[in-house]
Image (tube, rainbow, N blue to C red; front, side, top):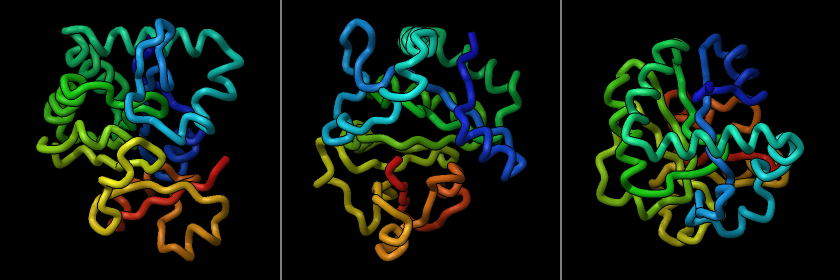
Length: 202
């Protein structure tokens, strides 16, 4: 199966930027067996887009995400991902357009993958703030802490790269955030030096 895919936003971003941008997705919030995939989600559960749209309408999409989740827990995940990245000649890889970092062991697998592919840029939104504390994040991996989770108060919005959702673009701009709603790479430190990433609710 394809471990790396592209949602419509990433297809549009790839075309606009002339780069191959892919994503790795696992189930949103909970697996089919009830295992928490987003252990620190809170308010965001109510409006999570990954639990709506095609993710709900097409069961095969959910089944594929479940398979990727099971693969991510396996001992061979790093090798499989390295092979997929090379095969698809990935420039940028978004870790999770659904799901989140569910354990430190899983995070460290992604650190290994990033270190094995120094010419690829990785990025991820996450609410697993506390799992990243004390870890040395590879230079080619950009972690963006998303608001709407259980540990929002721990995010230092003055220095931590973070994402906030707005109702409209004017509010986003007025608050000094960079709009990454259409071009996904504008969320990353590779194109955006601001620590304030804005997204418009959809």
